Image (spheres, rainbow, N blue to C red):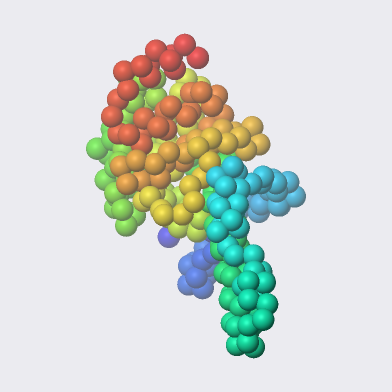
Length: 268
Protein backbone atom coordinates (compact mmCIF):
# COMPACT_ATOMS: atom_id res chain seq x y z
CA UNK A 1 0.00 0.00 0.00
CA UNK A 2 1.25 3.50 -0.81
CA UNK A 3 1.02 6.58 1.41
CA UNK A 4 -2.24 7.80 -0.16
CA UNK A 5 -3.96 4.49 0.58
CA UNK A 6 -2.36 4.31 4.01
CA UNK A 7 -3.30 7.78 5.27
CA UNK A 8 -6.97 7.13 6.16
CA UNK A 9 -5.99 3.90 7.94
CA UNK A 10 -3.42 5.42 10.28
CA UNK A 11 -5.93 6.98 12.69
CA UNK A 12 -7.94 3.75 12.83
CA UNK A 13 -4.71 1.84 13.50
CA UNK A 14 -3.80 4.24 16.32
CA UNK A 15 -7.21 3.63 17.91
CA UNK A 16 -6.94 -0.16 17.56
CA UNK A 17 -9.90 -0.38 15.18
CA UNK A 18 -8.30 -2.38 12.36
CA UNK A 19 -8.35 -6.13 11.88
CA UNK A 20 -5.15 -8.15 12.30
CA UNK A 21 -4.25 -8.19 8.61
CA UNK A 22 -4.65 -4.46 8.04
CA UNK A 23 -2.94 -3.64 11.34
CA UNK A 24 0.07 -5.64 10.22
CA UNK A 25 0.11 -3.84 6.86
CA UNK A 26 -0.05 -0.40 8.48
CA UNK A 27 2.61 -1.26 11.05
CA UNK A 28 4.95 -2.57 8.37
CA UNK A 29 4.45 0.55 6.24
CA UNK A 30 4.98 2.95 9.17
CA UNK A 31 8.28 1.29 10.07
CA UNK A 32 9.61 2.07 6.60
CA UNK A 33 8.04 5.49 5.93
CA UNK A 34 9.18 8.60 7.80
CA UNK A 35 6.20 10.71 6.64
CA UNK A 36 3.59 8.20 7.79
CA UNK A 37 5.52 7.67 11.04
CA UNK A 38 5.24 11.42 11.72
CA UNK A 39 1.50 11.30 10.93
CA UNK A 40 1.05 8.35 13.28
CA UNK A 41 2.87 10.16 16.09
CA UNK A 42 0.71 13.25 15.54
CA UNK A 43 -2.43 11.11 15.76
CA UNK A 44 -1.29 9.54 19.04
CA UNK A 45 -0.36 12.92 20.48
CA UNK A 46 -3.71 14.39 19.51
CA UNK A 47 -5.49 11.41 21.09
CA UNK A 48 -3.69 12.01 24.39
CA UNK A 49 -4.73 15.67 24.37
CA UNK A 50 -8.35 14.82 23.57
CA UNK A 51 -8.57 12.25 26.36
CA UNK A 52 -7.10 14.76 28.80
CA UNK A 53 -9.67 17.39 27.82
CA UNK A 54 -12.75 15.23 27.23
CA UNK A 55 -15.86 17.47 27.11
CA UNK A 56 -18.83 17.16 29.43
CA UNK A 57 -22.16 16.63 27.67
CA UNK A 58 -25.27 18.14 29.22
CA UNK A 59 -28.51 16.32 28.47
CA UNK A 60 -30.41 17.93 25.61
CA UNK A 61 -34.04 19.09 26.09
CA UNK A 62 -35.26 16.32 23.76
CA UNK A 63 -33.50 13.65 25.84
CA UNK A 64 -34.94 15.03 29.09
CA UNK A 65 -38.41 15.06 27.55
CA UNK A 66 -38.11 11.40 26.49
CA UNK A 67 -36.95 10.36 29.96
CA UNK A 68 -39.78 12.24 31.67
CA UNK A 69 -42.34 10.76 29.25
CA UNK A 70 -41.04 7.26 29.95
CA UNK A 71 -41.26 7.81 33.72
CA UNK A 72 -44.79 9.18 33.50
CA UNK A 73 -45.99 6.18 31.48
CA UNK A 74 -44.43 3.63 33.84
CA UNK A 75 -46.62 2.41 36.75
CA UNK A 76 -45.24 3.27 40.17
CA UNK A 77 -43.60 0.34 41.91
CA UNK A 78 -46.01 -1.35 44.29
CA UNK A 79 -49.13 0.34 42.91
CA UNK A 80 -50.76 -3.01 41.95
CA UNK A 81 -50.25 -4.18 45.52
CA UNK A 82 -51.98 -1.18 47.07
CA UNK A 83 -55.03 -1.58 44.84
CA UNK A 84 -55.71 -5.09 46.21
CA UNK A 85 -54.42 -5.16 49.80
CA UNK A 86 -56.44 -8.27 50.64
CA UNK A 87 -55.77 -10.19 47.43
CA UNK A 88 -54.33 -13.69 47.43
CA UNK A 89 -50.64 -14.52 47.28
CA UNK A 90 -50.62 -14.95 43.52
CA UNK A 91 -51.76 -11.37 43.00
CA UNK A 92 -49.01 -10.12 45.31
CA UNK A 93 -46.48 -12.17 43.39
CA UNK A 94 -47.72 -11.04 39.97
CA UNK A 95 -47.82 -7.41 41.08
CA UNK A 96 -44.28 -7.54 42.37
CA UNK A 97 -43.07 -9.28 39.23
CA UNK A 98 -44.73 -6.69 36.99
CA UNK A 99 -43.22 -3.84 39.01
CA UNK A 100 -39.79 -5.46 38.78
CA UNK A 101 -40.15 -5.97 35.04
CA UNK A 102 -41.23 -2.35 34.58
CA UNK A 103 -38.20 -1.15 36.51
CA UNK A 104 -35.90 -3.37 34.45
CA UNK A 105 -37.39 -2.16 31.17
CA UNK A 106 -37.09 1.45 32.33
CA UNK A 107 -33.43 1.04 33.22
CA UNK A 108 -32.75 -0.65 29.88
CA UNK A 109 -34.55 2.09 27.95
CA UNK A 110 -32.75 4.89 29.77
CA UNK A 111 -29.39 3.22 29.34
CA UNK A 112 -29.98 2.69 25.62
CA UNK A 113 -31.13 6.26 25.08
CA UNK A 114 -28.22 7.78 27.01
CA UNK A 115 -25.60 5.57 25.37
CA UNK A 116 -26.98 6.21 21.88
CA UNK A 117 -27.18 9.94 22.54
CA UNK A 118 -23.59 10.07 23.80
CA UNK A 119 -22.37 8.04 20.83
CA UNK A 120 -23.99 10.41 18.36
CA UNK A 121 -22.86 13.55 20.19
CA UNK A 122 -19.31 12.15 20.27
CA UNK A 123 -19.37 12.15 16.47
CA UNK A 124 -19.04 15.94 16.56
CA UNK A 125 -15.92 15.67 18.72
CA UNK A 126 -14.51 12.93 16.49
CA UNK A 127 -15.24 14.97 13.34
CA UNK A 128 -13.32 17.95 14.76
CA UNK A 129 -10.40 15.71 15.72
CA UNK A 130 -10.35 14.22 12.22
CA UNK A 131 -10.48 17.68 10.63
CA UNK A 132 -7.58 18.92 12.78
CA UNK A 133 -5.57 15.77 12.17
CA UNK A 134 -6.06 16.01 8.41
CA UNK A 135 -5.07 19.68 8.43
CA UNK A 136 -1.95 19.17 10.54
CA UNK A 137 -0.96 16.06 8.60
CA UNK A 138 -1.35 17.90 5.28
CA UNK A 139 -3.75 15.30 3.87
CA UNK A 140 -6.92 17.39 3.78
CA UNK A 141 -7.41 16.52 0.11
CA UNK A 142 -6.80 13.25 -1.73
CA UNK A 143 -8.53 14.19 -4.97
CA UNK A 144 -8.07 17.87 -5.82
CA UNK A 145 -10.70 19.17 -8.22
CA UNK A 146 -13.43 21.77 -8.48
CA UNK A 147 -15.38 19.47 -10.80
CA UNK A 148 -18.01 17.47 -8.96
CA UNK A 149 -17.98 14.95 -11.82
CA UNK A 150 -14.41 14.15 -10.83
CA UNK A 151 -14.80 14.16 -7.04
CA UNK A 152 -18.01 12.12 -6.88
CA UNK A 153 -16.76 9.11 -8.95
CA UNK A 154 -13.48 9.09 -7.01
CA UNK A 155 -15.32 8.82 -3.69
CA UNK A 156 -17.97 6.40 -4.97
CA UNK A 157 -15.29 3.98 -6.20
CA UNK A 158 -13.87 3.73 -2.69
CA UNK A 159 -17.10 3.50 -0.68
CA UNK A 160 -20.20 1.32 -0.63
CA UNK A 161 -22.40 4.38 -1.26
CA UNK A 162 -22.36 7.34 -3.63
CA UNK A 163 -22.29 10.71 -1.83
CA UNK A 164 -23.94 13.73 -3.49
CA UNK A 165 -21.33 16.33 -4.48
CA UNK A 166 -22.23 19.94 -5.22
CA UNK A 167 -20.18 22.98 -6.21
CA UNK A 168 -21.47 26.14 -4.53
CA UNK A 169 -18.88 28.50 -5.99
CA UNK A 170 -21.61 30.96 -6.96
CA UNK A 171 -22.64 31.14 -3.29
CA UNK A 172 -19.06 31.71 -2.14
CA UNK A 173 -18.22 28.08 -1.32
CA UNK A 174 -16.07 26.65 -4.13
CA UNK A 175 -15.50 22.90 -4.17
CA UNK A 176 -11.77 22.13 -3.93
CA UNK A 177 -11.72 18.34 -3.60
CA UNK A 178 -12.41 15.41 -1.33
CA UNK A 179 -10.88 12.56 0.58
CA UNK A 180 -11.66 9.24 2.20
CA UNK A 181 -11.56 9.23 6.01
CA UNK A 182 -13.03 7.40 9.00
CA UNK A 183 -15.88 8.41 11.31
CA UNK A 184 -17.40 6.22 14.00
CA UNK A 185 -15.11 3.40 12.86
CA UNK A 186 -16.42 3.38 9.29
CA UNK A 187 -15.09 4.80 6.00
CA UNK A 188 -16.77 8.09 5.16
CA UNK A 189 -16.72 10.58 2.30
CA UNK A 190 -15.29 14.00 3.15
CA UNK A 191 -16.04 16.79 0.67
CA UNK A 192 -13.80 19.83 1.10
CA UNK A 193 -14.93 23.39 0.42
CA UNK A 194 -13.33 26.80 0.86
CA UNK A 195 -14.97 29.92 2.23
CA UNK A 196 -12.62 32.87 1.81
CA UNK A 197 -9.51 31.78 3.75
CA UNK A 198 -11.32 29.04 5.67
CA UNK A 199 -11.47 25.34 4.89
CA UNK A 200 -14.67 23.37 5.47
CA UNK A 201 -14.80 19.59 5.88
CA UNK A 202 -18.20 18.05 5.11
CA UNK A 203 -18.59 14.45 6.25
CA UNK A 204 -21.30 12.70 4.22
CA UNK A 205 -22.67 9.25 5.04
CA UNK A 206 -26.00 7.41 4.65
CA UNK A 207 -28.64 8.66 7.07
CA UNK A 208 -28.92 6.62 10.26
CA UNK A 209 -31.94 5.97 12.47
CA UNK A 210 -30.15 6.92 15.69
CA UNK A 211 -30.66 10.01 17.82
CA UNK A 212 -29.37 12.88 15.65
CA UNK A 213 -26.34 14.96 16.43
CA UNK A 214 -27.11 18.46 17.68
CA UNK A 215 -27.86 20.80 14.77
CA UNK A 216 -25.05 23.13 15.84
CA UNK A 217 -22.20 22.75 18.31
CA UNK A 218 -18.94 24.40 19.28
CA UNK A 219 -16.04 22.04 19.92
CA UNK A 220 -12.76 23.64 21.01
CA UNK A 221 -13.17 26.69 18.82
CA UNK A 222 -14.54 24.82 15.79
CA UNK A 223 -18.17 24.98 14.75
CA UNK A 224 -19.91 21.71 13.86
CA UNK A 225 -23.18 21.95 11.92
CA UNK A 226 -25.40 18.94 11.21
CA UNK A 227 -28.25 18.41 8.77
CA UNK A 228 -30.05 15.52 7.09
CA UNK A 229 -31.34 15.36 3.55
CA UNK A 230 -31.12 13.40 0.30
CA UNK A 231 -31.02 10.25 2.49
CA UNK A 232 -27.67 11.38 3.90
CA UNK A 233 -26.22 12.73 7.14
CA UNK A 234 -24.18 15.91 6.62
CA UNK A 235 -21.68 17.03 9.26
CA UNK A 236 -19.70 20.20 8.49
CA UNK A 237 -16.64 21.25 10.49
CA UNK A 238 -14.83 24.58 10.18
CA UNK A 239 -13.63 27.64 12.05
CA UNK A 240 -16.05 29.86 10.12
CA UNK A 241 -18.84 31.48 12.13
CA UNK A 242 -21.91 29.45 13.01
CA UNK A 243 -24.28 31.72 11.08
CA UNK A 244 -22.29 30.94 7.92
CA UNK A 245 -21.72 27.23 8.45
CA UNK A 246 -25.25 26.26 9.49
CA UNK A 247 -27.17 27.54 6.40
CA UNK A 248 -24.36 26.20 4.20
CA UNK A 249 -24.72 22.61 5.40
CA UNK A 250 -28.51 22.88 5.32
CA UNK A 251 -28.33 23.91 1.68
CA UNK A 252 -26.07 20.94 0.90
CA UNK A 253 -28.56 18.63 2.58
CA UNK A 254 -31.47 20.08 0.60
CA UNK A 255 -29.52 19.73 -2.62
CA UNK A 256 -31.07 22.83 -4.16
CA UNK A 257 -29.82 26.43 -4.28
CA UNK A 258 -31.35 28.94 -1.88
CA UNK A 259 -31.74 32.41 -3.44
CA UNK A 260 -31.23 34.29 -0.16
CA UNK A 261 -28.03 32.42 0.79
CA UNK A 262 -25.50 34.48 -1.22
CA UNK A 263 -26.66 37.83 0.17
CA UNK A 264 -26.57 36.57 3.74
CA UNK A 265 -23.16 34.97 3.56
CA UNK A 266 -21.20 37.37 1.38
CA UNK A 267 -21.77 40.12 3.90
CA UNK A 268 -19.94 38.11 6.59
